[in-house]
Image 1 (cartoon, rainbow, N blue to C red):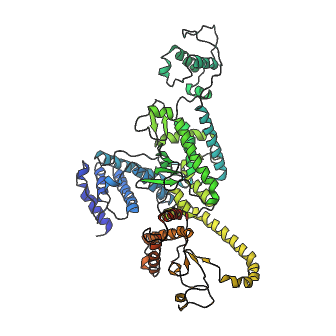
Image 2 (tube, rainbow, N blue to C red):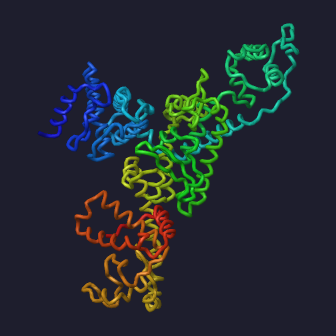
Image 3 (tube, rainbow, N blue to C red):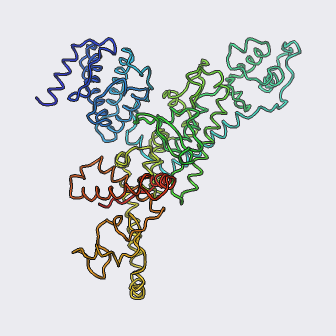
Length: 605
């Protein structure tokens, strides 16, 4: 029986099994690792009468199953362990990848996401352990091409958006400064808070400001109901209303922030996206203690956050550029701290009265009815982005389409890294990818491979030009330098050789050795008596070991003729890098292993 028939039979079998509580869920097996997941889907499937909806449930199961297989291979899936508050966000990211590869259309991706949301609600209904709620990601845009939503911003757009963000941040920061009395307006209220009668005289907004400064203690009232509680507040409200303006707009024109809305938070959120290149969902989920000024292991700033494709917390390092980009590293770390500090200042009063479940969230705001919310609330962000775009005219001049998309900050960030020549290993760390292959797939899907190839081509041409210009110089110097070559140490990817032209007798006795030629032993420097291993070599050795292990995990290289070379090199590396056997101290080895994260090796096998 083929796999499709077996799955169909299993689906029909699970349809007949009742599911009213978690204890009734079918258990996965080695031969059917997604059986428990399938049972959850069938329990919703049999409650529907629409054939199209039933078809959508089956299709959603196929995609969720593919996601689970992508993450866990053929390991059994237990819902109590795998479902969490970011499960729908994770599926959203999977669907996005499918759309970028043109395997799904925007509209059907929304159908699948909505279907899985109903499945997750069923999981909550049957009281799945450790799963009580989940975040709702935004819907996929119906009218914008998906590929446009994830393209880097052009240089012109970057400057325009960056200028708009900085302008709004400056505006909001002015609103949280202490209010300074102006003395404007007239004393239109007497000591008993009664309006002084003036025949046919129109009271001005400056008169309302006098009331605010002298009768309301410069404390903004934030609801029409509260205005009626005092005579002065009632008169103030009537003056404002007579001019056809909204009291919140009047307050802000005076430099007073009476209500923290999503529009006030948005420029800081966009700035964080711009500076870090993090996923939008990860930015939404940040909490106030997620910024670590100095990580205990590295002494570098970092952000803790829930990555949408991870199975737990993950560190996002902010200080991982090479030395020649140190200025950018310092700027990045400092800007993130400034953003956090300003958002905490902005939301400090709101945080005091926020419900307990929201108190620790970074992005707190108030909605029209006075309720305090926190992200992720995608529709509030969408509305704020629309207002921001309209205020700053962030629209494509030719089509009139909205330019600003939060999803475009991450690929723009990557585009900047590639333009600056940052290595693939550093890009992997910056994006928070656990695997280098995930980074390669990300670059390929977003067509960064072409950009990277162009950069490589430029470098190769530069190398070629330099080689041509120096060929005559080398020819003239060759003879004079020849006698010195025998005494010059030569560095290899693994270590430094004292004398590459005078290998030990064990190498000279090999059949492939030619007298007068450099040592021809293939990648066996670590076992050579001539080898010099210093502390500066250790990071390269740790990087080499890491990449060997990665290749073993992700390929069948041990089954190839090169397998014995890798095994041999690992056998040589282990005693050098193991604290129990190494001649280097634990401190030296720990420091070297940390530095190895920033090294991109050439895997010589």
